[in-house]
Image 1 (cartoon, one colour):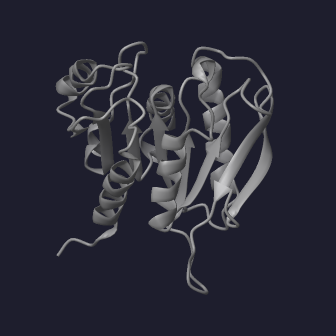
Image 2 (cartoon, one colour):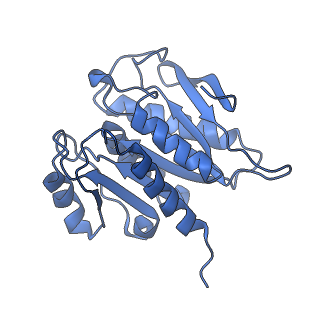
Length: 222
């Protein structure tokens, strides 16, 4: 962990949830753009909040001035409970979102959601649960797990603030399955040429694409 990373525990639906918060380096008096909550890949396949893709997402948000909160789903690390195939994990994510927002000085804090693989599946249903009134201002889905899970569609109003990234040669979630999920929504998918599911050797590119998306979104229209 770097000096601006804080480890903490919050109360979840079935017990303690272990989490990390990465803070941006801001000038005196400046405040973060908002808080980004990031969900990790499948708990039964070694997915944790320390996954390299999850860390890369956190660094991208921090670089763009966001607080980044990542956490372990139930049954992972020091988080209590047992794996629940996405149902309980959605409850965990919602608890982290509520805690992250409530810990800010103002209720108007912007919320961003990001997920990798299984985490993207859970995040999609969090967007659905939040509804239009609490919709995130940014959404980043990486390696979207459209093969094995029922990933919820992204609301049309959120398309312009959504980045979907996928590796061309992802052998865990084939690109064709993500396209089949995205096509009915006319939701753009950014494909990283030669990319695998875990983006081996391409994490700097992944980070730069997320940063570019966030920077474009924060630039006022002329």
